[in-house]
Amino acid sequence: MNWSLRSAAITIVLGAIAICSPHAAHAGQEPGASADSLRKAYYSYDAKLPLHPELKPLPVTAFGNRFHLAYDSIHDQRVTAIFSLPKKFKGPYPAVLLMHGSGGNKDVDYIMAVGQMLNSQGYATLSIDSQYKGERVRPGKTGELEPDTYNLRDAWVQTVVDLRRAVDYLQSRPDIDRNKIGYLGVSMGGMLGSVLGGVESRISCFFLAVPGGGILNAVKHIDRYPLLKEKFAVTITPEVLARVADIAEVIDPIYFVGGILPRPLVIVVGNHDEIIPAEMSQALIEAAHAGPEQVKRIDSGHIPPPSRISFDIRNFFVAHLGKPAPTQ
Image (tube, rainbow, N blue to C red; front, side, top):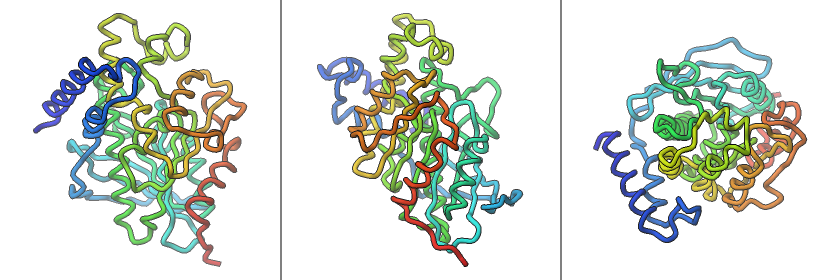
């Protein structure tokens, strides 16, 4: 079955379940097992699909040997990424997947800064361009968070599977410890990581910075959140809300993030976040079943400067992926 027919079939069945079930997810209740299975089916793929990876050297940094990486994903997509190996440490290396926010790309400044810090501690890193961002830009397409467009749903699904393919790539390398792979995502990257955690068991630990959930509820009350309204760019009508509900059924992190625990998890919340409302942060925390030990609230806006959380990032991954041995 091709992609469009498969998507349509799953959407129809999810919609039927939502209409018929008294516990429908559209009503904000716990989704049924059948709906959950169908939702996760969007993110399944053939693990035997060849990666055809291609590495090209990039200028080195003080702490890492960097490479431009490209590999194959589903739907004939070629994923572009930055792969970096640490200097002065012995392999096989633990690795951390890094995921940018909606306005960024694989080498945006905050991702580069975190990557170099992790290289300095002995970790390999891999950061990808999300669908329609960075080198994957396409005319007429956007990777922005437009919750009433099926383009968002399809781009979201594509990027989550692209991240699963990144795990395939890391595990194919003898210089990477296949059992020590972590994830760090910022903003949209944190939301994508929440979904990834619900469908991908090979990642050991998750550091999610300023994510949110409860997309449908946020859109219903969008007038409360002027900056989010500007970013989402939606005009509320019954038709728009129905479309948002349909899309949220497949991509909303609240339906997936509960699959991360008991693996190590940290959710960072900015006390003055001007983009993600407190209600969206709390919706994700509750869906994750996260306790106080998994939530770190910091005195910052939406994008915390890496210097503000770099020690937390370092300590988190050292605690859960171990400290690589230096070569000297």
